[in-house]
Every structure is written in structure tokens, then in C-alpha cells.
Length: 308
Image (tube, rainbow, N blue to C red; front, side, top):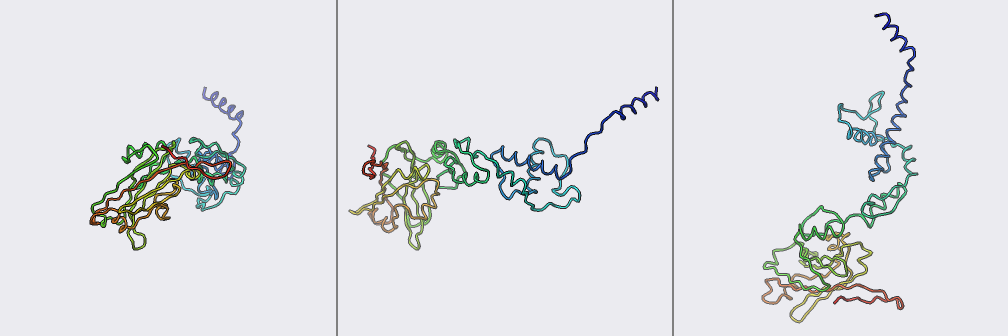
């Protein structure tokens, strides 16, 4: 019985075709790198030049370990000598990447564009479908989203006042104006012409002079913002100061708008003069209106479209 079993086992081994040898290590590495490149494409967060061998090893290891639990610690190195790879560019994969075309990573937000691999990143930095940062200026806020989402966020989370209409009349009162050297307020969000606008009021130092500044930002892209104009007016004691301009897009931060002085700037002494009384308390009334510029196709001139 024992000899029969041995004969059967010997026969099996004789008829067994040995498996083909594994591919050489460089081929395995290249396939692993190509796999990682394709995985990065499918996640819409593609790798860009320089594509490094070390980075691909790490990415592939992470992709593998996301499926299977890690059982061993791995060293990123050459399999034969275990020396570290260092920052070695993978020129072969960079060449492969040049032939690829990828959708914009904001495809889910409505962008239909498809770009060559190395043009994709430049487009995404300027894509009109990319989410907007929260425009609230009273504190740093990391929330991003589209305009309807941010309007709800401003109303519910930041408790910003909402106003419908193209004209406004806002009164700002401060009992100790000389104690406020640097402050930011978002006063109101206006809804008119189917769009949203943010009114800002800031106190800061312009050189050595304390000033106040009011300005409007458009909740949308800069190209759309150019279709609108606004005016701000402040006055008292028979004097008035008027500013007219185009609203800046919320793509520009409130600090960028402030630092460019693109708005109504009032020196503190002038603001206190407008406030009347003993000039110790700030009682500043800011009025304004928003209108849409309509192009006159015959004459080429812009005609203001005022809302009632």
C-alpha cells in the first residue's frame, strides 16, 4: 500500500508542469507603477510631473493595504539590495501620461471638459465650476460649496441677515469707535436680479490713519460680477460721500478687496463728523443700490437696469 502511494505521487510530479517563472523585478515594478497611475486617474486626483518611483511605491502600497490589512512593515527600497530608492523620476510613466486625457475633477459639479493629462491641473485651478470658499469675513471658515449651499450656510451658521431688493439702508452704531482699530463685519446678504451680494464693513489702519471701509462682493464668478454695478453713500451735516463701482467676486477674499481699497473709504474723523453730536459715538448711515448693466446693441453703450 505504501509503495503504491509513493508510485502515484511520483507519477503526479512527473506529469506536473511547473509554473512559469515570475516576471523580473523591474517588470513587476513597472506594472505596479502603471497600476498606481491608473488608480490615481480613476480617483480624479491624478499624479503630476515629476512622477517619482518612491511616490508610486508608497501610493501602490497604500492602495493595496486599503483592501488587505497590513501584516508586515515595508521598506521602500530596491528588492535585491534593500537600498532606498530616493527621488528617481519615472520617465516611462511620464511619457505614458502625456497621451492620456482626463475629465476635470469638478465633473460632479457640472464641468464637462476633458483635458490632456498635463493641462488638467492648470484648468482646475481656474475652473468656473470649482467650489467657492465661505465669504464670511467675521472669522476664518473652512466651508466650501456652491452658491445656494453657502447662502444657506451664511444664514443658518453665521446668522447673517438676508435681504431681498436692490436698495439698502444700513446704520452702523459704535459707542467706543476709538477702541476699534481692526475689525471686520459682514452686514447683510442681498438677493436681487436672481443673484446674491454681500455687504462688508471694515475698520483698519490705512497708513497711520484709522479708517472705515464698506464694499460689496458678488456671490459668483468675476465674469458675472462685471454685469452689475453698485453705489454706496454716507453723509451727514449737509455733506455726503458717494462711491460707485463694480462688485468684486467672492473668489477674491475680503482681505484682498480691502487691501486694494476697492470700496467706500471713510476716515474715522470724517465718519464721526457725519455722525453729528459730540463726535464721540459713531452713528454712520450707509445707503446704497445695486443695478444690472444692459448692453445697448445699437449704440454699444451700457444702460442701467434699475430694479423697483
